[in-house]
Length: 583
Image (cartoon, rainbow, N blue to C red):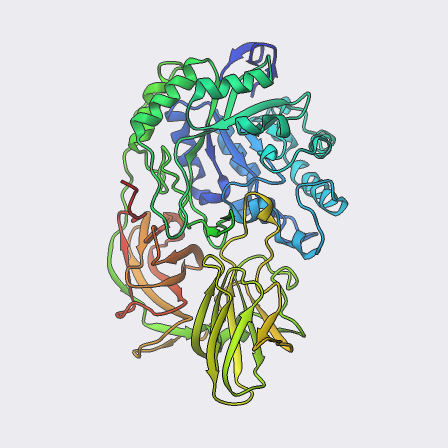
């Protein structure tokens, strides 16, 4: 691969003028068996480069443990990009935002009560330095200076929207260099934040989705010479629970792209292909009200969530062809999808009854947070015995993020952080009644000062104004459901309950799991965690990648937190339902 150079006019690749035509494709949001397909389609749209973030929280789930295998095999992804003839822009963070859980920062950082993330806090910088050392050592052969595809590496991510500590950015840049990164470095910020987020001697780039001429003029005023690059050209957007599905008109987006390319600037589409927030990996925003992001990261991108080219793909390809050669080979159409009649979930297992098989309780005077329990994702089940009888008021100092309240196993209320709910009244009928609170981490905040987002019950729990003590805190990460004692049942069950069923296929293909009639929970197919569903919408289906399925018998497990579909059935359909759009 060629080496990228930066001069007073623009980019040069092996001495020749070069324009980056790039698109965002996050390997960690796509099943690895589908990486090659998505990369191939990127080249077919006319792209010469792929951009990806790197999620620190997945690669280093605990201190002292580093992963780069399976769905996190970044070297394999880079090999595939290189084989497709694509360059790579690498964005390793440490903070990535990306509507990703905690902005990619590992939850174990928050076990330190006073830690200051994205700062020169010594504990934070020590962890960052260790992360970079472990991540970058195996990636050195993939740098363009060593013949690999990685042309440039980003320093932090939109830091100007968070802080203005140049010494912090200098430390990160120096660490990258010390770890062997000898390709160009760059920063990215929204135009209004360039002064705070840029670093002298490092290429500054801008993020925007419209008004290209004006925004590039702001970048040029800040940086009088050198290349102009829009690192995040926003051609779609993400969805949050309880809102509408966000889309952007393809013709209007293509017109904005034409305006950008006409200036001679380089571009990276955010996103070319969004993918999926599988499992518990979605992030959240909190601008005075907590708003979790949905499972789908379709992003209304040129490639949809299942990797099929959209109308936007065609429109962008036509614009790119005005400025650069586009492959003449045909673009694949929509791939075949699997559709099956309703699948019955005939077996069940109660979460509350089976909790000991899912996690080990820890005794303490006050409830322990997820971070204190060394837990990254999932739920915590808090239990204590109540010393009183009669009407009571339960108050939680903080709910992070959604607490289902049970008395002797019977539901008495739900408290949601999103709705600023922290108190519920009920009547205790016997001394020693067991109070259970099932608390869901709905996604750590990924943007702004709210990233210091500890989960579970971080504060006091009061009963009639007196602090409740003597708790068992049981982590329920739900990383494996193998020990659940499923049993056939025909009776009506209320949540939280796991429901299981099977179905047969003779040939695998992508499909969409539809959960009409179910309320809220999570779903797995053959042990692969598809993500969250919620009748609140907008999303009403979950993407099932073909590689998750197998010929013969397949298993579906649904954790319904409230009340299951009356017939306890789910559907596998050819098309998704991402919800209504805003008219």
